[in-house]
Image 1 (tube, rainbow, N blue to C red):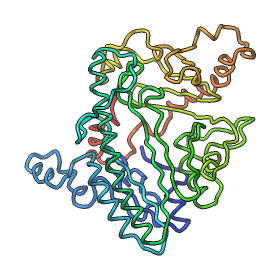
Image 2 (image 1 turned 45 degrees about the vertical axis):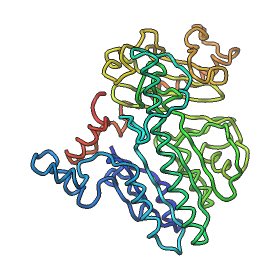
Image 3 (image 1 turned 120 degrees about the vertical axis):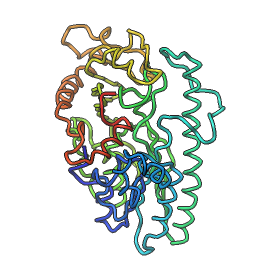
Image 4 (image 1 turned 90 degrees about the vertical axis):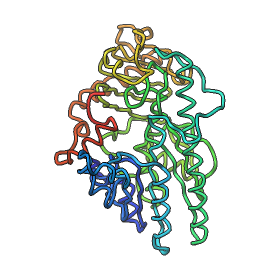
Length: 406
């Protein structure tokens, strides 16, 4: 599919007088998929000669030349992307504010950190399927090494941007986040995008800049809140709707997530507990979850053991009692932040009365919405490649795991 419909952060800032720049590290963020909207300059993963030569990749004779030029790669190393981003930043006109989107793709599998695995003590243990605790610990040290390497790259890059901004008499605002986490044994899964648990969904969201008070905000936000929230804060405008995941404001919720996020950047207190809607449609996995008032309700289509066997370790050999084998899950995120104690159906007797028990109240409030969202996933517009996407680009997406059943 392509990114389409509604405003974007880049478009809003371009219209507001910013010079908008982007440098990305993977082919599915190419401007041809709509991600170039609003950007004056875009350093894609494969631009210029390399992009022009991609259709020749299947042929034997040009392969050596293509590899020498870096063509045919669905992703590029973060060092190269940061070099392009640095050049865009420095070359931009000095009389206009600049907005730069930088995307790095180093941490996902295969885990091959340049600095080797992280040697610090591993993270807390989690239930593990076949592969055993030792294999899970090894994968986690490698993944943590990837994160360490990216942090080191970004530290030097941001130091250069701050120095350049200061030389131009401007102040730098930095927003850092990620599109997903990584499951490494938790809930019998590996990889990402399959199951809507905290290990795959919770991501860093750090914003630093002039006028932003240093503090930690516990209110949960969706990534769909970040773009309109930043635009509202930077430009002094009302947040715009956030697209197909936009939810109707519930009674008692004084602000949308984007409004609350913009208010947090201004130093105001969140007006109400956050609400987050989660939808995943990844291969054979379809899930909808709602986080509200400290509770999380998950509904999904049943996933068979055979489906999980096709996933990379440590997903193979998953025990039969995993909670995603049932239709619904319910978690008390305050008492059980690691989502290990599924309260459905033990806390939900067949009585239709939800007034007394907060667990039943949370489940009842979310159930109809979850069922409706699951039905809507059948018509979700991003499940299939857009008509006209070149075969070689579809091959690259398939190589990255974005097409197909796995």
